[in-house]
Length: 392
Image 1 (spheres, one colour):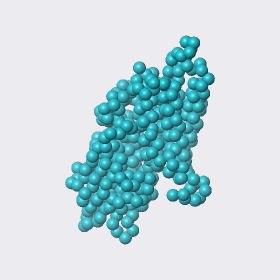
Image 2 (cartoon, helix red, strand yellow):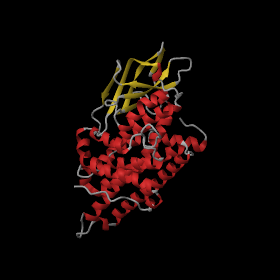
Image 3 (cartoon, helix red, strand yellow):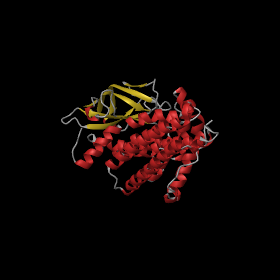
Image 4 (spheres, one colour):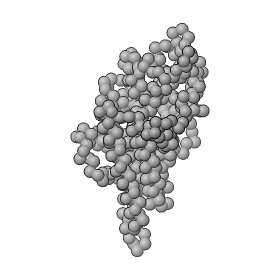
């Protein structure tokens, strides 16, 4: 069952994309159609991350795609966004894996790391030979990362880390964890550490029983007296601003990714409505109420495309603000979740089956609405920006 994706471009945006941007999108789209779509429902059902696709993604330059050098593709931010869009049209959990590898692991090494750290990790992560995870969130601290209790204590030429992290994508398959901890010194600043996952005292345990993001691995991390060399400290990190810069990179990609999930739902609903007959042997697309739902979706998807495209252009010019990214993440994920629910409505009972991608997107997007800054936290970030008053 299901339908082949037709593409969604109501506003003729394709005409404003460069040849390179269209080529990157086509490459990602073909990869998703040929490799991910045929297996994703089985992966979701069985809680399996399709690790066999990692080497191909490395060859296509999807990891650290918007970074320069070290074997990275050096894509523009708009090109990177289009890759995220296509990957999430396949599955949010699958896109999450790429976001973590790229924005939350390679980016901090690239931005805050020493030359030795960059040369050691980035080329191997660009190919997918080495995988990373990002340890910020804790069991007791999600929206308030500043409350973290994970500590790093200097001892000779080592640091000793202790703490717990939770909701960590790829934790069980990562070769290295970017762990954020408060350094036990005069100011207890948050710093980032490279922690190889085979070090004694480091443990990752997989979180099962998720009804969302089932095709990606979610883990808890436990660090009990984990010794790392002082050279594993990311030297450029200092304070909460550092992990928040990483989250900004990821949120940018999510704003594009959510559009892909929305496109998948809308395109499925549109094709279904034109073929499903009800009342007087007419397709349900001939009914006003169905047309109204389809119009709402294509209008919101089109506005979201413009929003992410403008934010991407600002990012490529170096003039983007974190508030712009917050607006795009918040709006586009909300929009995508509404599209999933409306599309499910149009498909009726068929909408809940794995013959169609809609219910899977809906369950995934519930997590996307919460992670990387919840919908409400982004409202407060925007509220602070426009009023000058912090409400949290």
